[in-house]
Length: 85
Image 1 (cartoon, helix red, strand yellow):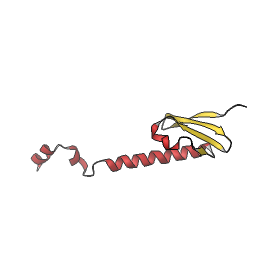
Image 2: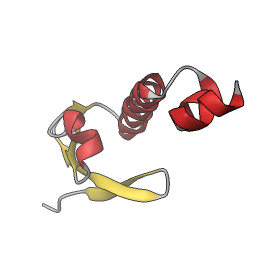
Image 3: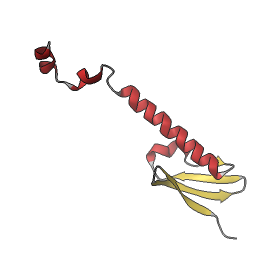
Image 4: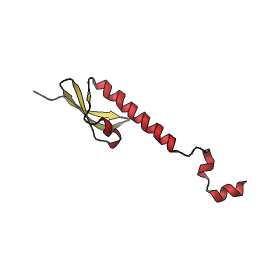
């Protein structure tokens, strides 16, 4: 019996492998960003792609929320800000 397996790519890089098992595909992450999906069983290969997108979107939103909220002023050192007023 041969094992069906394939590399899983996301955003033009390999992020893990999927192995055919009874009931679907088991995903094994090779990138820490997708560790939460490591070892999960997906009924279809397309479901892996969908979940990778969801994880990436959450990570992007989290990074955007961590950015300063006061625009360009956050990029200007305080002494320069004072001289501009």
